Image (cartoon, rainbow, N blue to C red; front, top):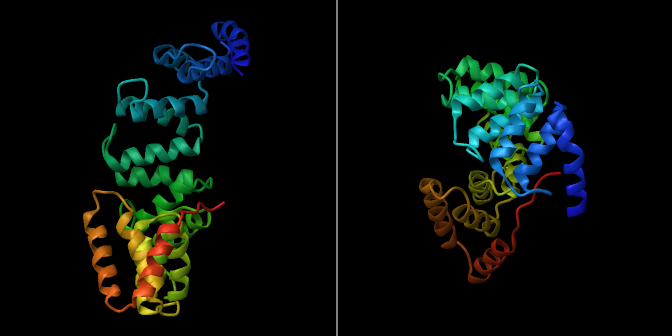
Length: 278
C-alpha cells in the first residue's frame, strides 16, 4: 500500500505543479493524511488552496471545513464562511447546509435566521438530510420563517425517513402532541424507538414514558426501566436536567417492580447496543 501511495505521489506532483486541479486536491489530501509522504499540514493547505482557487466546489467545501474546525489551520470562521459560500453558490448541498449553520449561529457572518433558512432550504431540496431536519426545526420554532407545524412535519419526516435521529425524535414529539399531524401515540412510539435505537437520549426518555403510561404500546415497566436507564447514561454530560429526570423516572418505576423485573431491565440495558439505520 505504501508503494502505491509513493507511486501516486510521483505521478501527482508534476501534474499538480502544472495546475491540474484534481492532482492539487489529491496531493493536498496525501499531505494531510501522511499517505506516501510525511504528514505536513502546511503543504496540505497550500495545495488545497490552489485547487479551491480554481473553483472546484468539493475542494472549496473541504477547505471551509478545515477553517471551521481548526484542523491543520488556525480556526477562522470568516474564512470558513468564505469557502462555504463559494461552494454553496455552485450548488454543493453540504456547503449550503454549513453556510446555513453559520448564519444560524452567527459565526463568521452576521447572524440572520432568514438567511439560514435560505441556505438550509437549498440543501434540503437536494435531499441533504441534516438540512431537512434543520429546516423543519426553523418552521417548528418560527425562526426565519413564520411558524408552520405542517411544514415542520414535512421536513422532519423527510430527514427522519433518511435516518436522522434528531428528526425522528422531533417527529415523534409532533405525533405525540398532535402539532402539524393527527395525534397518534403509536406513531410517536415508532419514531421515538427509531431515534432511541440510535442512542438519542431524549427519545429514550420519551419512549420509556410511553411504556410506563401504556401510551401507544402495552404498559411494560421492564422496558420503561431499561429505556430510562439508558437515557440516564446517555446524552451530553452537560445536559444534567435530562439525565436527572431520567434517573428520577427510573427510580420511581423501580418502586413498582419486582426484584426479577428489575434484574431483567438492568440486564437488557447492559446488553443494549445502538443501531444505526441503513
